[in-house]
Image 1 (tube, rainbow, N blue to C red):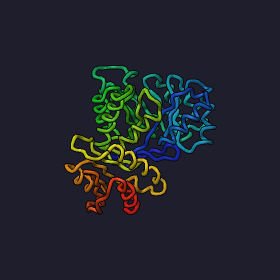
Image 2: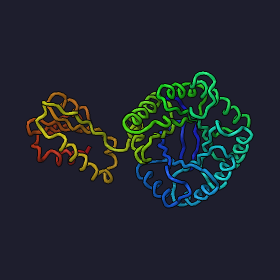
Image 3: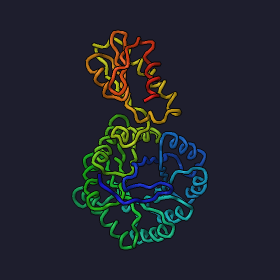
Image 4: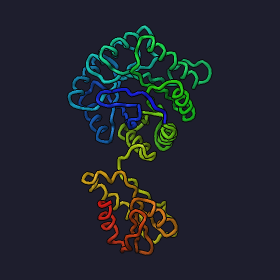
Length: 346
């Protein structure tokens, strides 16, 4: 794992081996406070741990003090073009600034750095392929722009930095982050920007972010889709859990079904999920468990044995396994009750 330096963002620490944090971004007018507040609540409920919003004008900055009073999570102001909006956002209590060096001149970056130092607010140097000046290959244009900007920050004695180098392309994004992680030890914010929507957009995000995280690269993540922000957060949680980096719910291993199946696996699976939801709050430790729900005798018993707990069906009978050992065989109408009983005693 690439060990990065620790940076504080509000009440969170990122980098240095701290858990990878999920960031979301609002998709409504920042100045429309009732709508913004509702969306933020929904994002937090889904699992957002840092929330970024656009600052287009001074009126947008008025929401910052109110948000800081009403919510405990850190907020990030997304600033483009107008450096004064960064200054005002910091003075009003924002936890972090995201700037794009592709659209703010260095003489104005210097002004942002001054006020960020005064208020001890970190800055994300957020480079995007769409706004970087291309000088040869895209990846090296991003890397060189990042190096140049970071040197400018260093020359101005500023080191509370987070870096991102996003493109809509999986391979280029992976290459850029691999390169930058070898050069600097600042925390990295991962994402595939403008990934699109639907299966392709989700797949690009999973591959790009997932491959990097699996290599130990990345400290915060944001999934960027043309979809509601709550859906982006669900995908982010899934990426982290699939890699066993964070645990948000029990992992259910279930077979894809085939012609050998002699039980109604889909029905049983949905009932299992429903019953688990009922007890998650009372038994929070179950979110780290692997639960197998298998439908035939070929792989079923083996997968069920390898999980923390599992059931394998065959001809209206279900075998229950717990920590690799068979507990017993039960009729279909009893198996879910037996599974839940044993689940809470692991």
